Length: 432
Image (cartoon, rainbow, N blue to C red):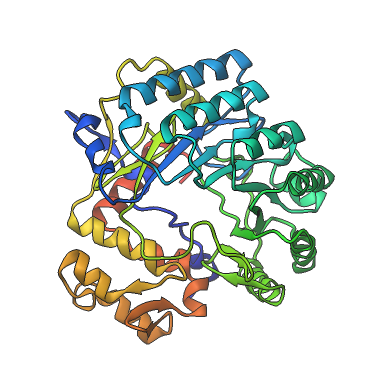
């Protein structure tokens, strides 16, 4: 297997947003009842604002928005919540992502949490928020603490100045250190730090030093990502290449973090062994998520939807303006209906690629069929040593875990793959 084949796609959800298409005659009021009953429901707020666009970022976000513009965005989020009439449903947790949620000013942040409280009430529930070093001030952290944020995720990527510059990150290592110290001072139940390996010019020695410093702060979780250089990003425009040592750097990450007392939950996620995760590994794939804001995805059973996904700034800004002018959010106009076959693929991806593993009996109960007969690919992977069977579960071996971004994409259906390729060709013909 060639080195470049290992890193095909990060399968954090399925199907990818680039497979979504125009929907007609879909009213969310027909699907919101799926939030009732014993189903696990999550609420997500998307804040698509950043100070700058990082060189590798292909997320839906925009830069350079004024205070007044952000206020208008929050007005629109409130209108969306009101039209959904969410006080009739219950949610078990809240995630605030982006973008950079702490890009919001203090008053705007207070307003955002108040919006969430009106939906979820004042009960205790996990609240997760993302931030960047430059936006992490003690005043904002105190607001987050008062509003019961339980997990805060800080994107650092590296503690080396030159590597940050190669990623077009604008914070310095000292700003990252100061942000960590502020977070530790305020005290949250869980601190997660994000790092990247495979950065152009990065060495195994510099990566180890970054990990060593990261571990010294005793974060409850670490997410360590291989660098992806996607169409529409600055690194792609600059024709940058991922380090040829990326595969070896993965081994270093796993070995060092294991020795440092962290348990590997997925190819990217490492949890301190004395910490019980807020979202423990378990059978998953059918929970509902409702997203508020422009760019976030919603999952209501087999209906997945969001505003159209873009990468380049001009397209993101155009879509964001369209969101602000939307009159009726109850009309769902862009998404994907999963048939039973796609639901099976989603279920496998959401379980096999994580420490929880894929329970064969649970699969049979949910779908009424034997997974071995439907997906011979699993048996092929077993023969190759990528998958093993334990306690009636398919589990990734250590080699299989390393190959997550190679194995996962093989589970994409031909229809979804065709849609994704069509989307890439439509928006990045000049890049591919």
